[in-house]
Each structure stands twice: as structure tokens, then as C-alpha cells.
Image 1 (tube, one colour):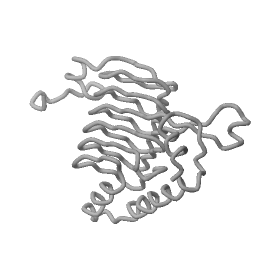
Image 2: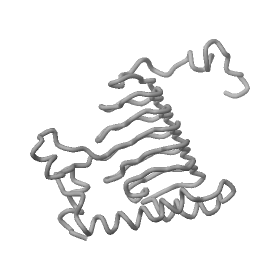
Image 3: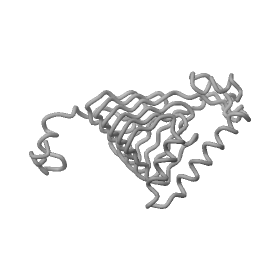
Image 4: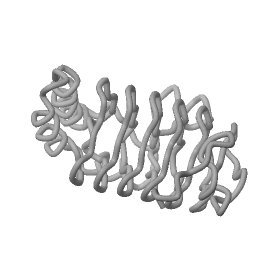
Length: 205
């Protein structure tokens, strides 16, 4: 692999993703991703084996509901234990994506580490840059949310469905919107009610 281009994938510098050696590795990763997406529902052991081969790091009891989409098939993804992803998770993992234990992704979530310059002359030359994404433990990223390059989301935070996360979001909050903003902190109210007046059974706490 072109060492210079490979290094620039992970430093935020502009680089050319069409480098022949980068593409050769990428296609090998995509072969494994294709195999994963062709697994049958009862082939859970095969899915677990493939994920361990596909990802940079993946913990125990992780689950990804196919179809799963990823630029490098998880090669640059680091997941803790018990991470759950519903249908159509898209990880543009041209650089590293970190996800903490017990985090959940709703359907159609996109995590994108890749960006392209605003300047037309640079885009015409197909330059790209990548910035890592960090998502804490026990987060819930709602259906259709989009997380953009360089974003960090703190532990326990809930990102509302359809949100576009352009900047860092702290821990222990509910954040929604486009651009995604903190709506409120998670607190005592959430120990009492879980949805529109429905009370949390106290034996669960």
C-alpha cells in the first residue's frame, strides 16, 4: 500500500482515495462485507465469526442486522461489548470509528468519517479527508440519524431520530434536530416515565 496515502487516511490530511493500493485493500474488505450480508438469519455463528474478521476490534455479543454498509467493511471500526445495530447501518469508515459498550443504533443510521473540500478545484481532483468519530457507552442513536466527521458523543446520550450531528454532544443528554442540539439532561423524570406518561416499573430499577 502507498504508505503516504495510507497515513493520510488517518491524519485528517487531504489524500486521494482512488490510490490503487488503497483500493486493493478496500475491495478485499468489501468481499467480507458482501459475505456477511448474504448470511441467512439462522447463521448467527457465521456472522459473529465474520465480524471478528472484518472489524479492527469488536467485543462480545455485538449484533448487526443486515444489510450493513461500510466503506471498509469495518476495518477501521472499534466496538465494545453488546453493541446493537438495526437495518441499514452505514459506516463510512475511511478512518477510525469508536463505539462504546451497549450502544444501540436504530435503522438507517449513518456514521461518516469522510469529507470533501468545499473548493471545487480540489473536489474535481477527487481529494478527500477523514476525521474519526467517537461514540460513548450506552448511547442510543435514533433511526435515520447522521453523525458527521470528527464528532464525539458522550456516554449515555440519546440522539433523536433524524438528527444530523455536526458537533460534539456531551454525556447524559437528549439531543435532537438539524443541526443536532442538546434538548435536556437525562434525569429523575426519566426514572419515573419512559414514554408519554407511561411509568417505569420500579422493580426494573
